[in-house]
Length: 119
Image 1 (tube, one colour):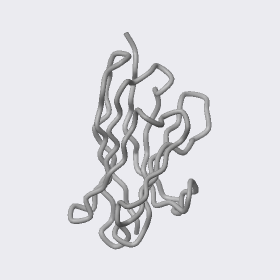
Image 2: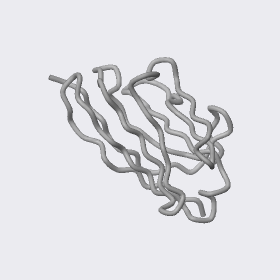
Image 3: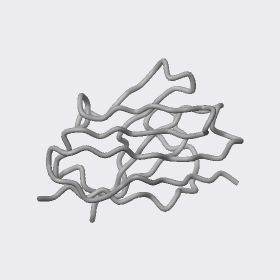
C-alpha cells in the first residue's frame, strides 16, 4: 500500500520561509515523478510543483515560480518543498503524491501538513 507522510508545516509571517518534507513508500519512490499539491480552505486541491525521478526536470505552477523549489533524496525516499517569500494566498494543507505531469497517480493521500501565512 502506498503511503505518504508530510511534515514541516507551520505558521509563518508573509515573506517568510518553510521547508516541507514528504516521506513516501520505498516501493514507489524511485520509479515515479513526485509532486506537491495544496488545498486552501473551501478550494479544490491544486498542483504546486513536480520533479522527475532523477531530479533533471522540475516544473511549477505559475503562482509559485521563482519562490518555491522542489527537490528529492532518493536514498531517503523523501521529496522536499522549499518555500520562500511566502504570501497569505499560499495558506493551505500541502500534500505529496506520485505524478504524471500535474496529475496525481494514487488515490491514497497522506494527512498533509498545514501551512499558514499570516501576520
